[in-house]
Image (cartoon, rainbow, N blue to C red):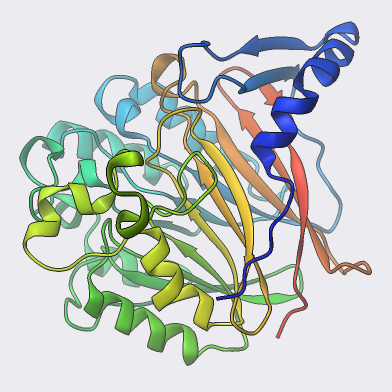
Length: 362
């Protein structure tokens, strides 16, 4: 494995937070620092009124993480998120919506009804939904892979949605593992969505899916991959030092499962067309990012995005990946913004607003 060590997002926030915060406050920005007792005390919000700017000739991928609290307690916030996405589909050229799992909190019919209603508000906007631990078993306990997901989001409906490619061949009527394609910003894209705690046979299937579409820039979404300390989940190396590892759930007792480091070694690092891996799940400040290189030297941006710890189950925050048309000397640029339709604010903190380059399209 080749890995590039970079100045991490968390180091940047820690060393520059005071200086940047003072500057932003002087300019009228609203600052809200995380509770000092949290696991990531350097988190700082810099809230700006209004939406992020709309870039001409850019395409947008929307990240929708951990809606579990909305489905259970605040369905109006979930509605507001998807309604805003639908209303901005044309002006922002929204190509796809990626739900990172924990669609529900306790895997109950009432929660799934709320989630279904909210996602239906997307109308014609393409979307894919990963499964999280809270989407499995009675009460969301993730002791096995039983779920109501398919009852409210049936496979027949998914097959009619734009971009649908297929599902895990051993479970063709389940959406827990699926792949999707689209074209945006001059690239062909492949989305591979994997279940919480992916099994070995699922990774073998995903390996074939990615290999057979080597001309597509690939984004992997799965519920648990990167931890808030900006390292991948690694049960073999860190065990319980990292909370909520897939190996610590009952579902792992039935069949071998994989965490972030295992996913990296067995799947992502082997494919030079992989450019992003995105997950939710993790608490702390719910944010993290790191760049590693595949075996062939391709940079892979890995992002943790989770807002569920904020008021009202997440305050409606979304992450927008704005892919710029064309390229510069470092590759095609992606501008990242976090925006809440319910608050009407953008978070200008350096952990919530940043840029990175995509490798050349293959």
